[in-house]
Length: 144
Image (tube, rainbow, N blue to C red; front, side, top):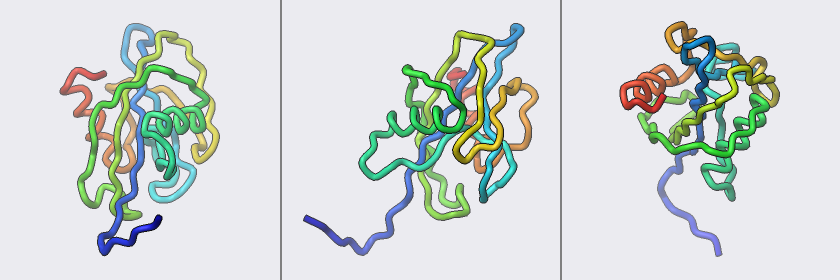
């Protein structure tokens, strides 16, 4: 059965805020975007949720596709729903946090990421979308 509603539907994405300790300091994993919007800018790994996919499964899939990391334990952190946060249209993002014990975790970019790299939290580059705000809220709430 199919239904039609007179209401526009927002897109749903997931983003992954993954951290580790390296040389005694916290780092977070970022990817360099291969496509517009924000082409070549750094961002949290993430992407669109498929129509028949659970959010947690989408988060794990996107993380693996973009960085090569397979993490089983991710925790839902916060939903970001500010209108205008994505220039492609109304997009709601559910952010997951995770931690890697292995300080020497190798990452490799693939899918729609041209590069994947660990950054110290106090030396982050300019970030795409509202990803700086996401990281700041996670710090404020002691989630990273």
